[in-house]
Amino acid sequence: MATRELGTIETDVPARLDRLPWARWHWLIVIGLGTVWILDGLEVTIVGNLSGRLSEPGSGLDITQSQVTGIGGALYVAGACAGALFFGWLTDRFGRKKLFLITLAVYLVATAMTALSFDAWWFFLFRFLTGFGIGGEYAAINSAIDELIPARFRGRVDIVINGTYWFGAFAGALLTVPLLTALPVNVGWRVAFGLGVVLGLAIIIVRRHVPESPRWLFIHGRNADAERLVDGIEREVEAEKGTTLPPARGSVTIHQRRSTGFVEIGRTLFRRYPRRAVLGLALFIGQAFLYNAVTFGYAQILQTFFAVPSGHTGYYFAAIALGNLLGPLLLGHLFDTLGRRIMISGTYLLSGVLLFVTAWLFGIGALSAVTMTACWCVVLFFASAGASSAYLTVSEIFPLETRAMAIAFFYAIGTAAGGITGPLLFAKLVGSGEVSQTVVAFCVGAALMTAAGLVAWFLAIRAEQRSLEDLARPLSAADPDAPTTTQLGRA
Image (cartoon, rainbow, N blue to C red; front, side, top):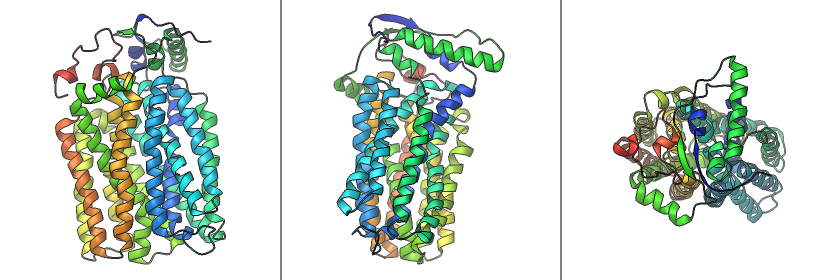
């Protein structure tokens, strides 16, 4: 049983993790933790593309398409916000590993129960609980990823991992086509949700082998466990590379603690780092409105304005998902080379401007279902990299003791502002059947993305290839108020 005797220690664990070359061990982290976003993409896309079929007679549910995309979408996001806050606090208190296993289990049970829905209220309840599990995943997973991945790779890895959401969306879009066209109306949508359970079970088997964050361990009185874990990682990497690792440079002195209170967390986020707090809120609100509105409502646009059959909307959404997936894959490395400020502000601003252009073309009747989808592919190519950078940003610019809670807070507040109102407003405006009303929905999303890009231009932190402890000293550090390069600069 691990001991938890608290004291003052000097540790070079962060420096040892940051100087590691990329190795097979890091792929274990990427696969074990990153693949959960595939589940989230699968979930949201399935619901969006199933909305038309769920509202048809004989589906087994007495529900309308607007209720699926509007109420169902908003409840899913509300659950994610609540789950992020609840599990985010537990993640900082009890560790990354315990919580990223628990949150995935919550998702699996809730998704399975969604597949068994027999009435609208049951469907809505378990959409909320599915979101509850996914929200907890965001806090636990992003904390662990940033604390385990070397600083020089952190940006691209985090961007790409969060971008894998769109691989799930791509798969979900294509899966819904045969499920909706080949299976009975009351069976296909249930099988679609069941597939998410199967994938989740496979992920939880891999995830059991992902270790606890050594950074969390040494903060919470388990320095010996952290040392043993990093020793094992170094031996594994040296054996794989056939070389001896160079000495680590740099250490930090820590006054260990068992937990961090809400008052201290709030004071840290808003009194010690107010500009970073504004940045986090702006990025999350912009991307949350755009993405939740589009992912829950695009099938409704295709059916309402272009008469695309409900069973074929998946083809169009697959194209959008592919554009989203390519954005992080092709642009991710630039966040570590060109830098955070240029890439975060650039991706938000470009996607906002391009969406304004798309809204104008749609408003004058210049788009078909195919060309509308092509426009969204281009918009979301940039927006997806920007949206992923929101999670990267809030997970790396606040102290270790507050990391999961910071991710949870900004995700919850930003997503509540944009992700709950987005689907409701989008469903109402698109449901009107009027082109002008849908143009308004597009323009709101474009304006929020553009505003977030401007905020990032002025407030983004130059975090590329820098250690987490340099960006924000741990609250437990012997010198927590020691200025870093970032603090002396624009933070």
